[in-house]
Length: 220
Image (tube, rainbow, N blue to C red):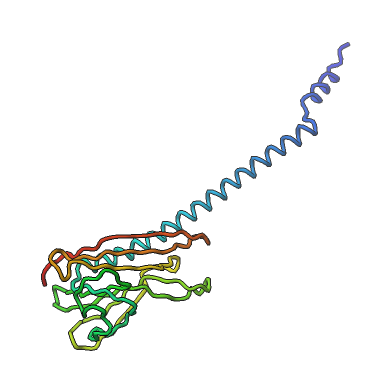
């Protein structure tokens, strides 16, 4: 008589995994999981770096836009050389070339007037490099500083209010202005050169920016 139970047991034995097959399967499964986790970590790190880089560039673009917007409405551009704001607007010694309105081939800072066409009040704006310490890293870094002196009237005393317009993740080590067209015929304009280093996730990346800022109005 045919033994059906014996045949069933033999088939079950044939369908079972051997120890070697099980070890190979576990090894392949582990390798796939590790590869997937590594790819996910790399993608997340790349996304964080891209986001941080975009934030740095957005901040730098904001600084350039701020300078560009104010300078387009400005006039009587004057460069500063080795003299930091706050400066005495009425002191000849604080202006290497002239008090206001002079071309220059190279300046470490820029000062100009802005007229409020509604009130008729003149304000003075200035841009320069300033240095401070980052309390989180303990390292010094340089940034672009925007300064403003309200209600300019020649011969009066003035109070400067200054604030940084670039973040601590940007170290600006070179800021150069050239002014053309103020003392000659043509449309006055300012060339701006910025060199710096952006710090993203403990990785530094050098950048260089050059742009031209032209005066929107010709007569006041």
